[in-house]
Image (cartoon, rainbow, N blue to C red; front, side, top):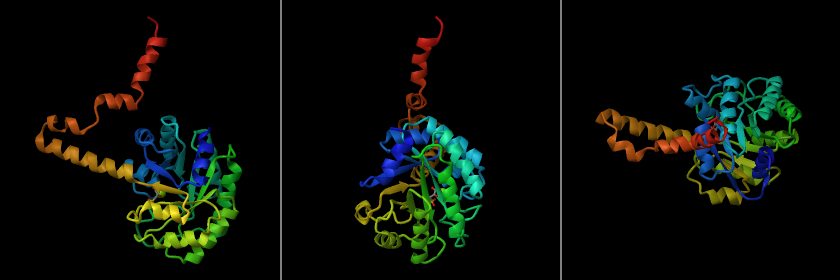
Length: 289
Ligand code: SPV
Ligand code: MG
């Protein structure tokens, strides 16, 4: 099955599915190895791994290069967090064409204004008008090189303090404009606005959620609410920060590495994750004796 078809299946099938964040080829491979069927190329995590804030400081071609490494290194489909599309409808068209060329299975576009900032910082988030954002979605749809390339429309109305009615009206317009799924985002920790949105949306098209702040809500509640897909949006990045910090502090303290050897990945693991053994086999096959 093509990656695009596979992502479409994951987004639209009746079972609740799970997408894991990745921000590099290596983290993508590890998430795939853990059993995830699809990956979220997170804007926050890619930016953070470059030491940048999640405010479109990284250029779109820098993001594209990273997501290409991720796609090359994995078989599962990748949904790119495309932020606002890095400009207007014209930037969106070019982005979608390039993503298709580089093996990315779908893009999520959010209805904020460029440059965006992360939904969990600040209170003021400028929203695009419904008309402008629908134009971007239609442009994205018309630029697909493959009819299965997925377009997810992310509604930021609740993040920017608008009403539930506004969020529903936006989702409705985006679905009409051709979005394959709606990502409804919330920064509240009780998950109530997500559940109300799901109730009132009534499965009009697939719903994607990102339970970063409302992580305490059991997964079964989302399944019962009719959510199609959960994105664990930053947990690989955060796990790596904790692990690296803990180990480097220990090494610094002890001025030795003997005590950490059993806590870190083996070199063989690194070689395995980077296809070294396959290259060795290829050497036997292709290098002149
Ligand atoms: C990201 O992972 O970059 C997202 C999700 O957009 S969040 O940071 O939760 O808004
Ligand atoms: Mg993002």
